[in-house]
Image 1 (tube, rainbow, N blue to C red):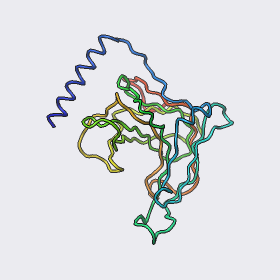
Image 2 (image 1 turned 180 degrees about the vertical axis):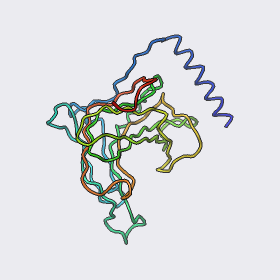
Image 3 (image 1 turned 60 degrees about the vertical axis):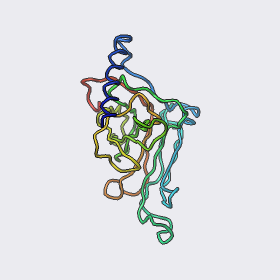
Amino acid sequence: MILLNLWSALRHLTRQYAAVQNPIPPSEKLLFTFKTEKDLARWSTFSDQEFGGQSEASLALSQTPAETACFSGRYSTEVANPSGTRMKRSGFVGINSVETGEQLDIDEYDHVVFRVKGDGRKYIANLRTENWLVGGRSHDVWQAFLFARKGQWQTVAIPLQHFLLTWKGQLVEQKTEINAKRVISVGVSLAGGDALQPPGNFNLGLEWIKAERRLHGLQEH
């Protein structure tokens, strides 16, 4: 706890110094686009098939409209061979930006913004960050719900303060500040079991992801 308090105080002083050096930083920062195959090469897909599940996921360029991509597939909570594994129920798919060893610094911003076309499902936005104390790659994943109406392109802004820390899929109860200066990876996933996600096909359109400063902004417009 003492170390965390010292670290928070140091970050506060660092922010004050940065504000003096750069008093008017840009109001937004483009993180990712989904226009070309080169853009999509920065992403990887994952699913519960790695653990015996039957969900499927892909990320591909869309023809209509151009310069967008589609995260699609089939969501299932079934297990291929229930008798041959400890896992009796499953159900998760997602995409992550590929970890390159370089971190995204979004500390000057207060929202992560997605330009998406929903399908009526509740998706999850993910931010993987370095751990405050140990640094390097960690299992720290900050998650928030990504809501988008079915069949419409929308700009959905999620406040950074709405992201909750999880560790290996479990919510961390202890209050911790997100390490927004060192974001390792950004992602979108679909999970939650039958109660939250009915089995079947899914389709989420993606145009871009940004970090924005919206001190009094709405979550969605």
